[in-house]
Amino acid sequence: MNQQEIINTIALTKTNYFNLTGMLELYRRCGSATSVLEHRNDIREVVPNASPRLIAAFKDMSEAMHRAEAEYEYDMANGIMPLCMNDHRYPQRMKECDDAPMVLFYRGTADLNQNKVISIVGTRHCTAYGQDLIRNFISQLKSLCPRVLIVSGLAYGVDICAHRHALQYGYETVGVLAHGLDYLYPPRHKPTADEMVKKGGLLTEFLTNTNADKINFVRRNRIIAGIADASILVESAAHGGGMITMKLARDYNRDAFAFPGPVGATYSEGCNHLIRDQIAALITNAHDFVKAMCWENDAILEKAQQQGIERQLFPELTIDEQKVVDTLTRTNDLQINMLTVKSGIAIGNLTAILFSLEMKGVVKMLPGGTYHLMR
Image (cartoon, rainbow, N blue to C red; front, top):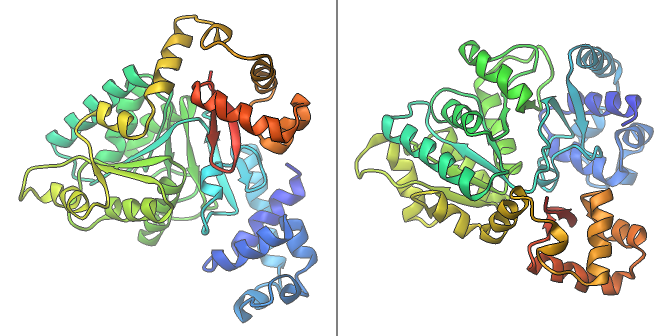
């Protein structure tokens, strides 16, 4: 990603911080932050219904550019990756959302576009019951689906419990923060966060020198929901951050699940209400979840591959199917237009081949129309 494009994208985020949807529409229509800045004096030619506030934001970009340049310099010196929306490393599931951040700041090693991503959320007052649910769920899930990225918010309670058990059972795990990457809140979670950077990562939309203000926790919840295939609520009171995340997940057309709890228990009310109102599906263990997500075939293939069975032998492939597999082996995660170019198969035939490979559990279509080869 071009350095100036990154700086320009950060500057746009800083310029219109409280109206991301308006700036995001402009960004998507122009195709890049650099193009947006080239059109800053004729915004309504690009977006006819642009708000006066959006137009006014471009009158003086000097302060925003200065802040963006300082941010970029800090990031480069401290191992932080600014991921612009046009960067292939940017989480593609999040990119589909109408209020996606134009840039995310990331420190870590995990692929944010893994084949399976789930968010585990809930109360900061996690009970022994909730802790047992998390430990048993992640332990069972590991035996069913060895490769899953687990996302949460690194807060007290359910969040930190999910991160720690993910690490314990060998999963990569990413914490989405409500502040910049120049410090950590809460400080006592730093040892876990340090381990996550090596086996997962820390992700935020906030620039450095941004405090963990209350409103930022609400904003970051949309990333926790948007980055994942499904969100799971472990324990929650009738109101709280976990409930907000679950609503956002449904708004993004993501799958939502909740563990039931004892009737009348304060930190099970939220879960029980979501199940009652059919906002979240009831699960009691990882088997329920995997079945509901239709991940059983993926799990079988993953186990076979871990046992050393060659993909060419499981299942049998036609000549053209093998050609697609070979193409994705060289360059994984391709959209169909690029796949047809690299494989040399006409797009009409390629569509049928990809469908057949999906049915065999060899290929899976990710959000955004990208085809992923199961490894």
